[in-house]
Image 1: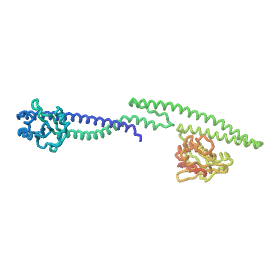
Image 2: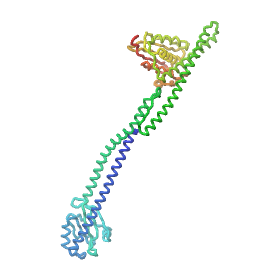
Image 3: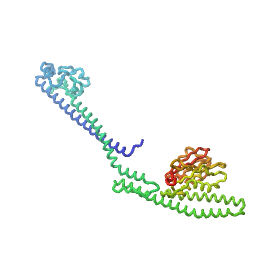
Image 4: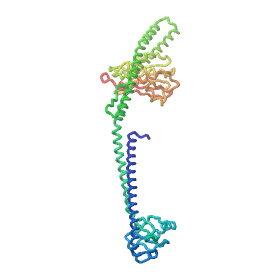
Length: 462
């Protein structure tokens, strides 16, 4: 799962803080451990020197003098753990509680100590952990035995445990605080970007005049906003050029096409036209009518992109259905276009736009209905709504194509479908939505389709 930038910054800051806290406490533990360990070693050296001095004061001059009552008493009454061995490693005297068995020296250790080395090990003495230092015992310049003295390391262990406990507590608390502080810092620094994103999300294709204008924001956000504003400027210019071109071309094409259709109608009135010429003129008129519908759709498409407000006047839908039926009845002589149930229903809206909607739906139904089929236009009143239906017995629409047929330049994929611009249903959906209504379709492949337009009734005319 991809995390947001806000959480990435928060977690990164928390990880850095946690790393710093852990590093500090690890360093602190190492330093304190080294200091206390050094103090223990100094104490052991001092204790060893104290034992040597006391033995020297007890008139011990050689190795055989170590096995005396005075030395035994001295060692037994020592304030710290002491053990004396002879040169062979056998115990001569030890203080109370010394674990003699655990302090046995191997031959290698004994040889190393006698050669001047020092051996250190940890053992438990009277319930406490001690560090025992083993070194040779000399009187003057004479080697007389082996000396083992101990020093408690409980303080060292307590400090290590305390530092570890504090590190865990401080690390956990620091992590929580770092997460909170990190989220607040990330939120504060990303808030300008969120504002830019919200403004950019609100800008629609039909209104590219709005700008982010992120003055006073951080430099990086300012650069991002300025770049986006410059892109919007270019898009607006291109969009206006395209829209003006569509508007101009639609207006320019409608005039000659209307004149051409009128001339064809005049020619069809000639009584002595041959059958072949008459059919040719009828086909030409059909193609001209199709071009007129196409240019009308292009014109309305430009109006939709421009956010045109629809006119508001009473419109009789039953009369509109009759006009469309009469106008398009001869578009396909092999498909029956007829009126179904017709109730007198009036809505408030733009008559030309609503008529274009019915023309588009009827044209779509006629195109996709095989020879011998039928298309029916119906209008009924349902409560406070007017319902117009265009039903056909055509090829139908597959379930996967239904959600996209009202999208711009989208056409259902079907081998039985004819060529088309793919904007008729898009224009129809825009017109119906602009009138506060909705358009729906029910269809099954091979069983035909039913397009339903639902519009609010006119409150005055009813």
